[in-house]
Image (cartoon, rainbow, N blue to C red; front, side, top):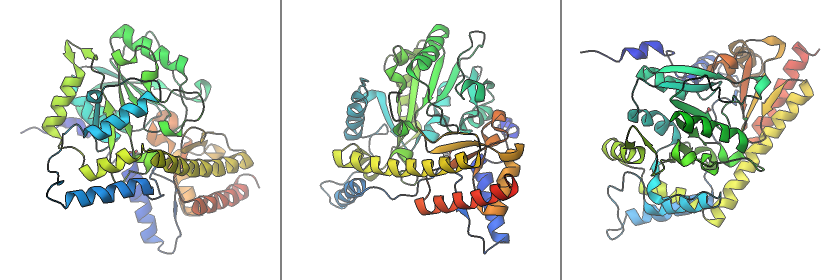
Length: 397
Ligand code: MLT
């Protein structure tokens, strides 16, 4: 019997598990510490009432013989897919319900989609970015190359015609930097993928945080339906991190190696996945009701206000940062040229504030740090007061 030896090539623990373990150990050693967590991007506001009402009604349906549901369609109920078709129509994107697959979240689908692809593909991943793209490909033993994102390109790397990539990850708004591609920039990626017959895996998990005239879906770009799969989630949009619901769009016409990827993904999902609970899908569909939209937009505004509170603090301290405008993350340069994990320890020990070390998102994240705006407003303000006091004292004194 042989195990998957590729596991020997990944970091021993997933970034956010490492952060959680360090914080747990610190709080065990310092039980009095009042720790404020601005690390993992986990929401704190409760599900909105439109979602809860729909879920309650669905629970009642499940308790009655006539409306009880057993196994549902693995790829999602029609009512949720239709709601998504209308949501995309609002973006000027025409989709068919069968192009949408409901799942338990973008993270799972981003990992699972790799079932469809040969291991002998070269994968292009931006650096820094959400660590799941790299880890899942290392697990499969694929060759990974990196597109450097840094201050000089505004953390938005562009295609290089000499780079030979088969699978390209794009995360816009980017996790962790908050950088968002405009239409011309995304068009350059689509053209690159079409020219090479490569495939873009587009992570739109933070699309609801975009304000202004920036693309919120890769399918707003001409030609993308022939070269891109899009992943999205209700986690950050509507507070479903614990409830679990997301979706993946695989265009019907998308073909590689003579195979329709939509058919392959359907086959994969119907074989390996049993669908998202009816109650959860009912809640997710309520996100698209007029009341649901109003309520989730209020929650997003609340988080964006937290981002502004953090941003103001960085400006006051003269700390370079980006993000926070179209994303729930502030991406900052560690003061005094500190390394990311050193700054993590320093903030945890001296201010009892938890963030995420930038180096966990890639080598270009070294000496950077991410703070999330998904916290409680009062606690976020408290965290910024602590950071202000500490940095002023130690670096600006
Ligand atoms: C993050 O903090 O980057 C996200 O919460 C991780 C995730 O969405 O899985």
